[in-house]
Image (tube, rainbow, N blue to C red; front, top):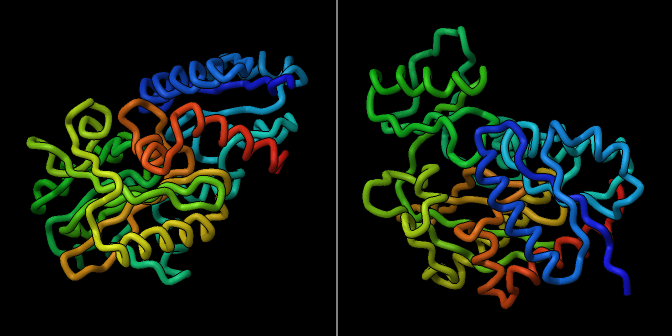
Length: 306
């Protein structure tokens, strides 16, 4: 049987371009090993060509991260072309990308989130009601781009200045102590829980810890009690539903010493490099990398155009 032809999108102009290219190469090679015809497009330069040739393809497989890739922009373009694509639609992508709005939705469905305040560029921030330490992050970046862990007022000013380089809205968030967990959703099935333990020199799961091989210890299945693993999976699927997602997502948590799970954020197009967390969870569930990406293709074809 003839395999569907895949338009693979990777690269883009976000700060996560290099990670996107690396993941895109891995996905393209895996699909080709399974016999899928694949052509790679790098937004935004290649999008006019994709529009001209759209009838040649059966689906789009975005391996894009950050603004322009996960925020609904490319999703709207693909819908306008009538080309089925992997991942959340326009609304779900935009909601999940916006860390402020997603936290409001998490709370609405009963999920716990760290305390937070929104700070806009040009406004004088009100005195913080959140005790230090705090985490400062741009509202709509991924891969810990522009993020800082802050211990005092002087550090807060510097962290806000850094975050405002990326966008005009910034979250100042309570820094919770505990174990870092993440749960992927594939289709409507939660994958095994992963525990993330950043290595020496990384105070949190920052960009270098995420993408430097060996910089972080990743344990799957996470060495946690079964009831906590079950609760994390349930919470990840609830977050997936609350944000109106489909096909795939990955939600990050903090598990405190008291056994409470706090949602940090949800990724609609999780990383697909050799150090990425979703492929690790899939392997633990018995899916090779090729199995994982082929399953993603099947999910897109089963859904059709949103």
